[in-house]
Every structure is written in C-alpha cells, then in structure tokens.
Amino acid sequence: MEGWTAASARLGCVLGSTAAGPIGHRWGRRTALRGAAVRLGVSAIGTALPCSLNKFVFYRALGGIGVGATALISPVDIAGLAPAPPSGADSSHALR
Image (spheres, rainbow, N blue to C red):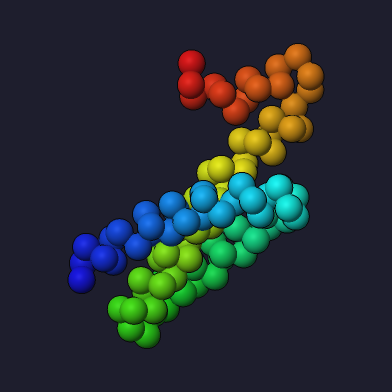
C-alpha cells in the first residue's frame, strides 16, 4: 500500500496535465489555474487531516491533479503576459 500512496500524486499529475489543455482551451487559462489552486488547497487540508489511508491517497491524487494542471498552464499564461520581444524567454528559460 505504501507504493500506491506514493504513486497517487504522480498519477494525479499525469491526469491533471492531460486534462488541463482542453480545460484551459475551453474555459480559459485563468479559470483553469483557479481550479487547480482550489484543488491544491483542498488537497493540502485533506492530506493534513486524513481519517483513513484511502482518503489520504485520494487527497494526494487531487493535489497531483492540481500540480499537473499548474505545470502545464502556468508557462503558457506567463508567455501570454510577456511583452512581444522576449515573449517566450520566461517560459523556455529551463530549456536553454
């Protein structure tokens, strides 16, 4: 069971990053980021006060969804806010 507990956040990250693209495209990046922030907040409270191991795993996976969505949408949102000349520089800095 320890392996599933540890892997639940990574599974959530995969699900969050997969779902974030269509959600961000349909309802907008800001709305998707707000939803991810809510998921992260609920996950923080849920993992701090779990009643059982199953609830702990659920809240870890929920936090992973928030992390995955944030990791996908944040660079796109930052690049959209940047002025025209260095438009992609902030989000692609790690790729250099």
